[in-house]
Image 1 (cartoon, rainbow, N blue to C red):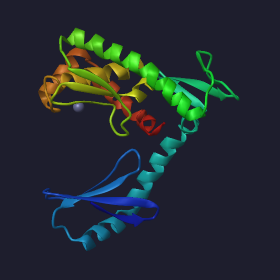
Image 2: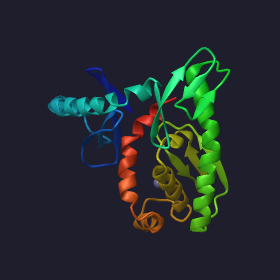
Image 3: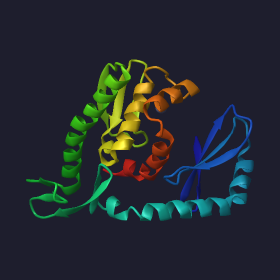
Length: 222
Ligand SMILES: [Zn+2]
């Protein structure tokens, strides 16, 4: 995987056994060109310059979306269960709206992170246990993660990992991720049968799944 430094954005090139060429921009603004194994570099450069306007328009839209979240990115506000709380810092205490206070803080953001992780550990495991019993499924172990790209995962040893940042999302989103990962205990893929299992326990999952995209900036916090 190599990249071009075009404008200020890096463009990654991912070669595989595919036959066609495609450019994709994810919601963090990362640009990737997918192309066949032997696709010439000069052609990639041509494609990038042809698509320049399209790339710029996309990046601008993503930037605008991220600007809305600037208070969260500055840790002036914190989402908990999808509700925004003002954060105030004084010498010794961090106040999270009027719902919690963190005393004897050392560093603001890391104290906040520690507090969130502790809260996440209880709450996410409780949600996972609840859905495991509703769905009559057994997982082997639960771990809290701080992955940057994933809300959760399930491996072939039936271990389920949930991102501590999920605690910031509305209840529906937490439930969706629990149901999604538990459904992987039956289907270790995203096949039709997998989605049927998800739908059985969350008929409106498509709406929630779409909503989750609005929260993807949270994965960059802390
Ligand atoms: Zn999945």
